[in-house]
Amino acid sequence: MRVAIFLACALLALCRSPATAQAENPDPRGAVMCMWMIHSTLSQVADKCRPNADHQFRNALRSGVKRMEDFIIRNSDTTLEQIDQQKKLRAERSVAHRCDSSNEAFREFERLRDTISISDLEKEIDRLIEVDRPPVWNPCL
Image 1: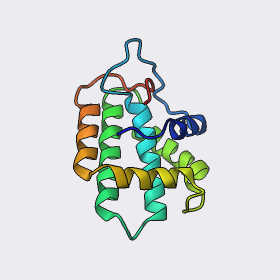
Image 2: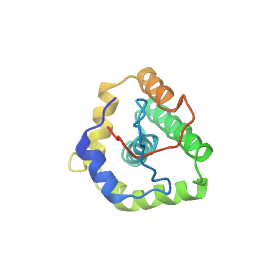
Image 3: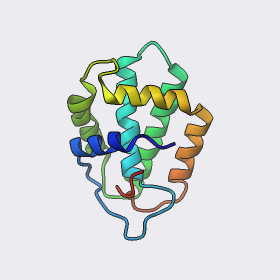
Image 4: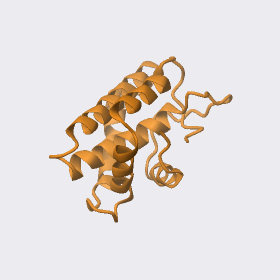
């Protein structure tokens, strides 16, 4: 699953997370911090904009975010409180927009939901967090 690079850049500009390490040798599994930020933002948008729809997909997305958060806490000095603070900050900045096609994050959620199965989403997150290592930002996508 590859979320549009422009979404990642926009979200990265809005948020700085406690774990900010850069990989000296990029891990082929991906950058957990970056993927957590994207998925958690999409999950927040889905919960706000689609509260009575897409239940299974939203639950899978929310579960994946929680698994990435557990990975980040386990593999860094980042605390759950810091993660929650970042999610709250992002909600105030990017999730508080309209729930229509003018909201880029909402469009990305709908595109993700329409292009990946729940099973494939879970497999991609499994692959992302299967090996403990420092959670890094780059390479993002």
